[in-house]
Length: 245
Image 1 (cartoon, rainbow, N blue to C red):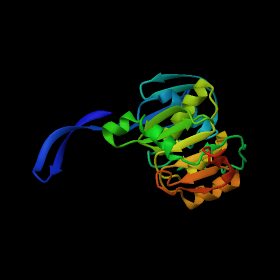
Image 2 (image 1 turned 90 degrees about the vertical axis):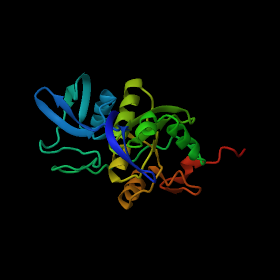
Image 3 (image 1 turned 90 degrees about the horizontal axis):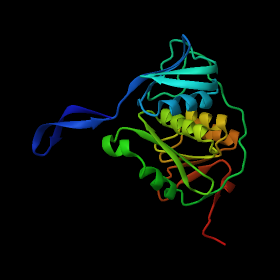
Image 4 (image 1 turned 135 degrees about the horizontal axis):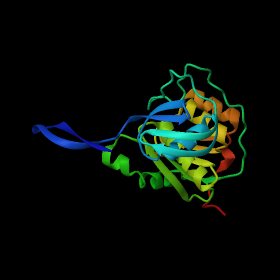
């Protein structure tokens, strides 16, 4: 978060003042002299970002890492993206190379209460950057019993996803239920499928490609989760009314 001069428009005219803006910078993941990927992201939780990105994109295995400014130096075995790739905050799957379509069928081991807005509320209460700037997305991981595990924020939806997965990798927690603050497209469901997430809950709409991939991978996908009548695609048996019985 950075403070910058702005002009505020109101019914009383134009007023100069300072405001908090969400940071967006180029983050480089590197192994030795090789650039694995460059990302436009919020420069926080960078170890989480690196661990989550490598895992969610199936680009290798991280043995160790260190942070050097906006570079993350990784040790391990990796598959680099094409050198001309720069993943912006708006694009999680843009590449000059081939896009790998996940074919994995996820397990069916967890269930959640049909009142999914309870999970959204927990995520919303843990978004300090959004409260200050209004300019970031969030992703939250939940345990099977509904307990909040981690929340991470970033200007990019896919970066927030990677960060929260990276946090769980470091802690050793299961990665089964994720809540996302915006709409959900193909690239986010692809990440979920690669790491075995069973339930994806989206505050906003879902795309047709996300719907198709969720069904083929056995993921339960909830759209418009903040509305009075969310909709579900994929296996419905993971959504239950825990107030009964």
